[in-house]
Amino acid sequence: MNVDNDVNAENVLHFKYSGGPPSTTDCATLAADVAASWGANLKSLASTNIQLDTVIMTDLASSSGFQGGNNPNTIGTRAGGFIGAGMATLVNHAIVRRYRGGKPRTYLPFGVTTDLNGMSAWAAAYVPARCASSTAARISSRV
Image (cartoon, rainbow, N blue to C red; front, side, top):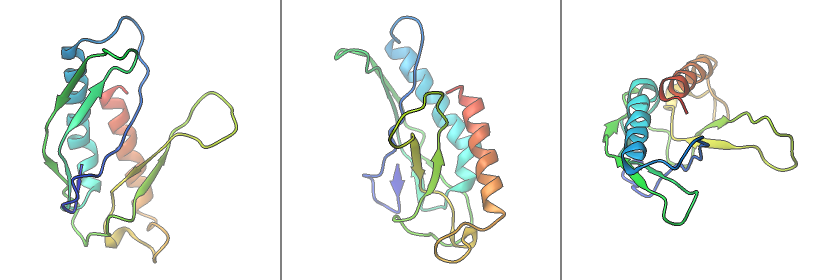
């Protein structure tokens, strides 16, 4: 992900699968699905300073797991001032298991200055829009 020309920004997500190990084609197909879902559901939350450059899927079940990728180069479309690389939208992920410690979460470089309510809170209209887009992305990519 490219955040205001910082090409070192990334999100690492882990997914569970059933059945045998995925092939390179399976990994590339899932990467393309995730990239398409980001373009269809999430780019509207990202400013024009945000670009999804690459999606890489790697099977971590073994040291020789296959890998596949996709390079969508999708640029965000949300109008408004860039809020800076130090701010993010937090997505908490639900898990079935109870345990001590932090819960899975993802920090996404979404939102623009007009989505803020002061310096430490999101505007009321932004939160349901973010939730709807994240839910649609999760359903459409089946991850």
